[in-house]
Length: 491
Ligand code: SF4
Ligand code: SF4
View 1 (cartoon, rainbow, N blue to C red):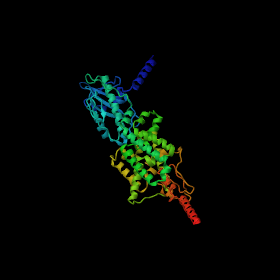
View 2: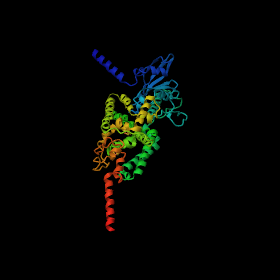
View 3: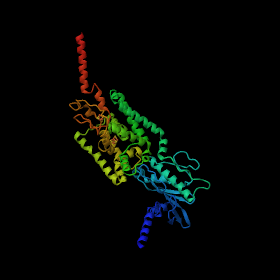
């Protein structure tokens, strides 16, 4: 009998502890609750569906607190939900919200706590009957708040969970304005709203990707028209830097690769990847082109930081800045750094994605494109140093440090097409392409090192150029000789 009651007690305790939103959960956040309700004396037990806990003052209930994870969980940019503690007073006025749990990379390392506090501070004073929107024109019952620049997805997710939470609690606790019903819960997945909101960007990106596809398909033809190819390439690099990078903030990152692997290992949901249409389309395109042509197409054409380095290097050339080529043997040893960084990142991400994201700051992408250099000075100094080195050593970051470039070499190993043409004479003895290759991806023996090639097509221009490529020069010389001999014989 005694054993039976112990067991029953234990089962009850386990059930109690496994219930979401019990007072114990809320108690953990007592300092945050006090900051929302300065007159709070204690917390009552959480109850209701969804659960919320009454905040008690000297004269009774001051309001309620709810954890958004107890209402709904929407995967945000990191693939994990953002948990917000929301305080609502007895008149249905939001006292404020505090983000108590998240794994958003942009919030971990990019956006400051002050930015986040400024954003969440905008919810204070709104009524639970309101439908709060991010951006747009305010209307009665539809107040508008400002987004955090560079953290659109995170902000959209926070807004959706806050709206849903306050409306559900308002209904459960009877806090709605008299005669007003809670706005209906949004039925459309959040990602669909993003796709609709960014239609023009999607069209621009789609057009760019089609142009690139055409360049790849007609690469042999274009390589025979060097001026056209060079203009197309420069135009495309500018598009990549300014449209994909600065405007679309769609610089792919090794963090995306780590998040994807984590999602595959845990709970994979398409909705968390669909949430940013530009990133989704780019990654889909890159997955296909890397399998068809190798990683070079991404690194040589679609990476905003790679394109920025290339354009700056060309500017340096025009300004007659010196440029250095490292000896082949040192150059090949330095490649290892990016693979070591990648391995360290993958290993660290298995333990903590958050820590891996800190190490992923080796990529300067976020500082440049997501935050437009609005960051602490060490990050800016790092970017300046990388771009400075890149002025004299072409694409130095890409060649030696970039963990994303390293990651893309793995799927690139299964590439289907081998369209970069070589001649028997390449490397033996001709060294023209090996000397001119923008990333030293051609061995002195003439082979292209696929893992390092950035698919710039310069070697293909040489391949087809009868005034540059020695076997063609020789062929042309012989043809002219034959022509002359033919004319002489006729005369
Ligand atoms: S190596 Fe990295 S930075 Fe360079 S082009 Fe490739 S992905 Fe971009
Ligand atoms: S020159 Fe040829 S081998 Fe070198 S990066 Fe360009 S396409 Fe690749």
